Amino acid sequence: SASVAQVNSYAGNRNCRFYNAYIHNLAGYTVNSLLWYQGENNSEPRMVSDYKVAFALFLNLYRTIFSDADLPVIVQQLSQYNSWTEISYMREAQWQFMTMFSEVYTIPGADTGDLNQYDDIHPTDKWLLGQRVAGTLAFANDMPPSSMLNQNIPYGIACEIISTTYEKQGDYKVITLVTTNENDAWYAADDITGFEVYSNYRWKEAGARVIDGKIKVFT
Image 1 (tube, one colour):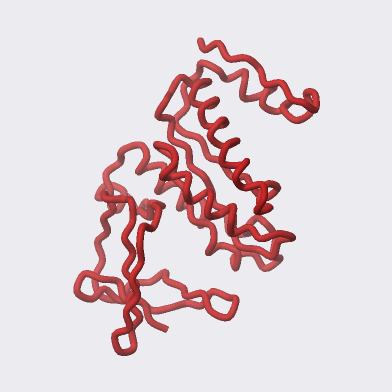
Image 2 (image 1 turned 135 degrees about the horizontal axis):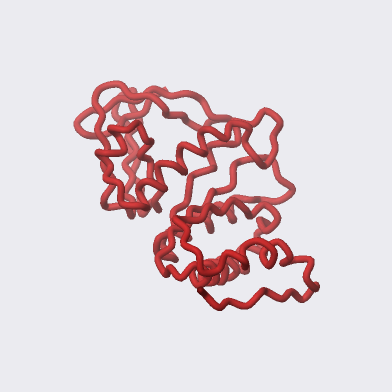
């Protein structure tokens, strides 16, 4: 069993009662992975740097509790919504976690704000987010991409974009992304679906086609 102390808070037990009552009592057990979906209350730009420090401490603590230095942690990026503050800084920080820490995977959320007609912090279509989490979880547990595709598990692993290039070819706009995920693989040909383009403050459905090994998106 693991010997991990309870957390004390400067505000008394109020701020950490859920951890002490629930998580602390699981010390020593084995878990497969963690899903972290939080950050709205810390999204003010001046708070983001502190949030990075807090996340590092959180990550170290939970991996210590469950005696697993490589415990996969899946982070759900904040969705797009009209907030009292600019949340893009927080979303960028959540994206950077993948290069700051090992075995941390960020689920894209910037494209999910239009799923919620009430403009809330939580998209109403949780199924899409669940699919993305399932695909990332399978990848984090070493399920090969070919097996995931055969079982209809979405293979859309989040990764940091290192560089982008843009080129217009006739009616097409070709955007080439170089990512940190060297093991990424997909199999598709001809017309494919599922692409949207953000224009005039809303996401619009776009056509896409695989040509010469590249995905070309057009509207």
